[in-house]
Image 1 (tube, rainbow, N blue to C red):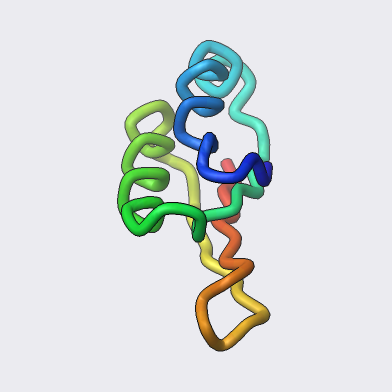
Image 2: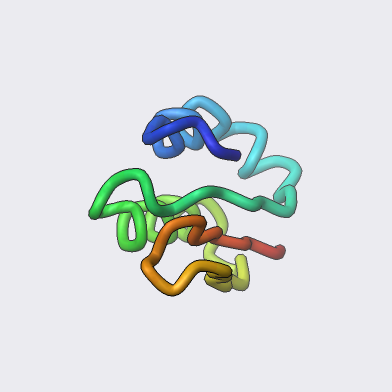
Length: 70
């Protein structure tokens, strides 16, 4: 999911789907300063057993991806 800073709102809209189906997630976490904290916190509040990883191919922090695996 890469929606230019709207990732948290999209996750909030997908709350029931995430709780019910526990999908794998790949979410951009670099549009807002607080994304690296708020996105994992919110996802874990929906399903605490998610394993969360960060991936980055750019040394300056752009293109940081939050990967969540149930």
